[in-house]
Amino acid sequence: MKNEKLLKATKYVGARTGIAIFLYGFFVSDYSYITGIGIGTVMGAVFIFLMGVFLVATEEMNSNRKTWR
Image (tube, rainbow, N blue to C red; front, top):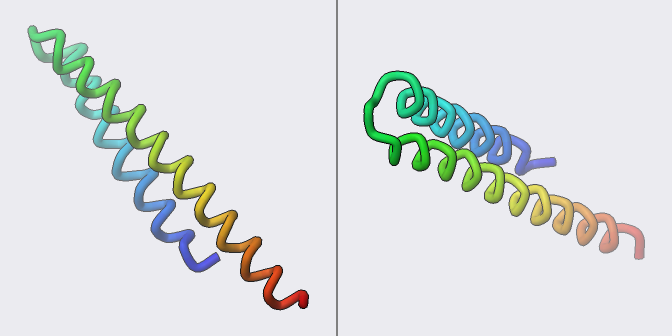
């Protein structure tokens, strides 16, 4: 897969950033909305990752179909 690097980068950057914001909001900050922002960032990263997996799988199926014919 040629888009594997993009999927890994999205997963690591989004998840680690979201977890860091969540932990900061939960343990360090007195404001509860920062915790919600962290949870939203993690959920957004998971959603984008799943969209990327779907697009890569679709691309792989199309490339295999073209070589099969």
